[in-house]
Image 1 (tube, rainbow, N blue to C red):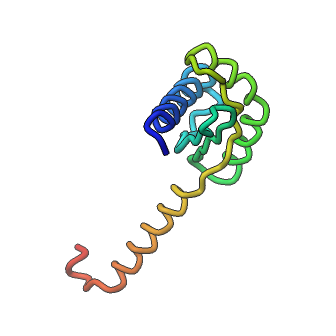
Image 2: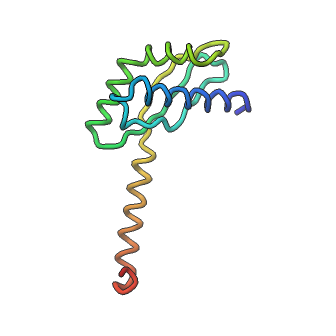
Amino acid sequence: MGQRNLRVNVLVQQEVSHLLHTRFQGETVYITITDVSISPDLRNGRVYYSVIGGEDEKKKAEKFFRKNAHNIRFQLGKRIVLKYLPFLKFFYDPSIKRGVEMVDLIDEVAQEELPPEILD
C-alpha cells in the first residue's frame, strides 16, 4: 500500500468518525470506526466499525449505516477534497469483540492455575 493511500485511509477514518460523533451523536454513541480501506483509484471504500453492546446495538448500527450512508458520503465530500469521492460501504468488525473474549479466557485460565494466596 502506498503512502498516499495510507494517508487517504486515515483521513477518511478520522472524518467519518468525527461526523458520527458530532452530526449523528445521539444515534452513534456506541459505534467506533476501526478501519478504512479505500481502493487505489479512490472510487470505492470499505469502512469497518465496531459496536459497544450486544446484538441489538449491532442491528441498530447496520440499520443506521444503511439509512445514512449517502448522507455520510455527502458530508464527507464537504469536509475533504479528493479527485474522486469514494463510494463507502460499511462492514461490522468483530475483532474487538473477539479480543475481549480472548482476554476473558486468558484471565479464567490464569485464575484456575494460580494458587489462591497469589490472587489476593
